[in-house]
Length: 367
Image 1 (tube, one colour):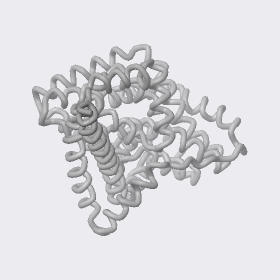
Image 2 (cartoon, one colour):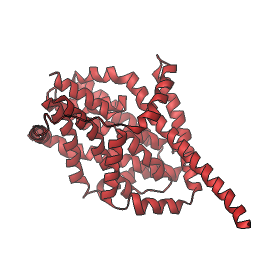
Image 3 (cartoon, rainbow, N blue to C red):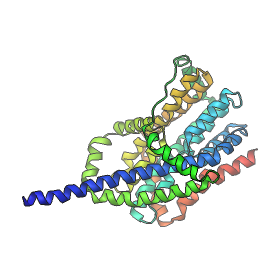
Image 4 (tube, helix red, strand yellow):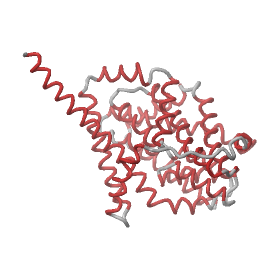
């Protein structure tokens, strides 16, 4: 009888913790969705106008970084590029570098998420490492593939050849289960301030910081070793399993920003290591190309299919290069995170310079 009395409070506490965890995860995902929706409301027309300025591959690359950073969505950038190629506003050779830049720009969201842990040094170091490793992979991939693309058009030729097999197949639109519970709330918040989307960004950041503050607390209140063992044994047991999880989860929710940001608080809590997260991020990079590729099939437009396939091919080549050499981006991320803990201004400067100031400066110089 006494054992039953002791077990009831434990069961009740665990139920409350589980409900709190689910509520905080929802708040976290809502904040990411609201950030994206607010930035899109402010920057979509600007992004489209900037894309009309692209006149060479280098400018295409920096435009891809900048426009994706201001709209917080590589999917939106890709969609704009596809429509502009289909309308003969952009050539495929100029569009492919924009897609490469979009891969870099999309990683700004999980970097912003990691800054939510900045007040707690150990958490911040783990969170920042988990987020920056995604960006370093994208930057390293561009550093290798972009010169080859400019010199030999390796992606354009391969994507054009492959696209011929997919014309007239027909498309498919995936259902996003998260959109049904997140987008209506995000839209309702933005409708309260129709002419001031920046208020949505402020609300999103408040929700984000609250969610991150208590997500780690709640996760640590569970038996952390059991959670860690569960992730190690079942979800992230092998590199292939982690990669496939990232791919399938991102294809399902149709947002690499959400899927890569979701593991940042898990890293901060010490549940996941960089080695486990890296292949998951690579899978997310492939997953984010799936919906655009399926949608492009519905157009029966060879150029649209070529651009969608170029995005997919770029990520596949990047994985072939950097997965065997994963020690390099992981070491870079570890060093950057360690240094940033000692100099807290570094991640802010990195985000501002790499994603906004440097691309904007290059765009202005090359106009």
